[in-house]
Length: 348
Image 1 (cartoon, rainbow, N blue to C red):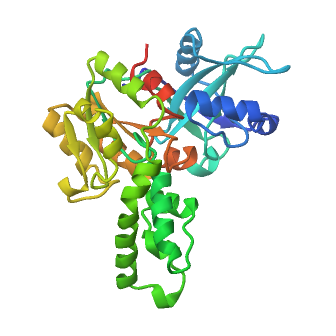
Image 2: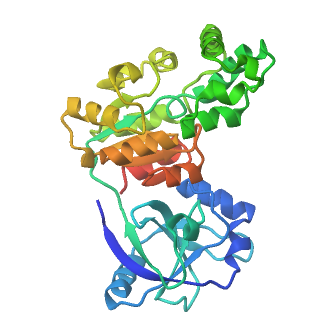
Image 3: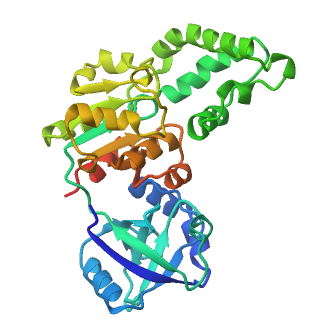
């Protein structure tokens, strides 16, 4: 639901924000509050039209999310937004006397000029989304509800070690976010680059999976609290995972699977993420319109599936995707973890 919108004209800044946004406490604050690891610097907009100035003046009267300054830095009011309906960002309004009422500073996880193809004097759409009246929230599983991304890295690494290969976390994340064939990234020797070797490695990985699952896979922190709060608010819950449910065990042991009235896996769909089939199928079973739902995940394909389905696409930084990857993949909002998730799904 669009709460407010205005357009501004891109202008050059004075260059001081680049160093400021890279200060450790500033970066940590942006990640903690908004799930955004800021690209160096800010994007500056000049508001020219009376309508844009009036809208921004009204928004400024609302309390934003307070970013507390450290040292000699002032506090700032912050407002999550979406730019050109493509990239999540934050307006930063420093609490200093005389700050220009027709100036807007934006922070994002990506270089906005490059990502949006902008040059000075271009117009940019800024949309504030203060939250939707959600009826349902759908979740991915791996990296979203349980910490199984690192566990798969361990299991695959044990299988690959037999042939002398190393599986890095970067390879796992690249495969999950970029949809690249996993074993083709691992196996570098031409003698082993064939379907038979890949099939054997997949089989050996799953042989290790049960032990690794028991040793390493746990429910992510604050998952139970966030699910309980959603249920208490009358929000219906579902799962759509691109896996075949190999990581369900921790959820089952904790009695959490009963929280979800619909559970779909890769076995239930024809098209993989980022195709929206699985998200839409869940919502069809639940008889809920996409605009009244959110899809929460941790990878670029998750964001693509949620955005294409017409849901609120919420990216968690608890799994394979970082804030830049999730930003360009279609995320409407980013959050660092389940502790902050309710702020987005159940806004005041």
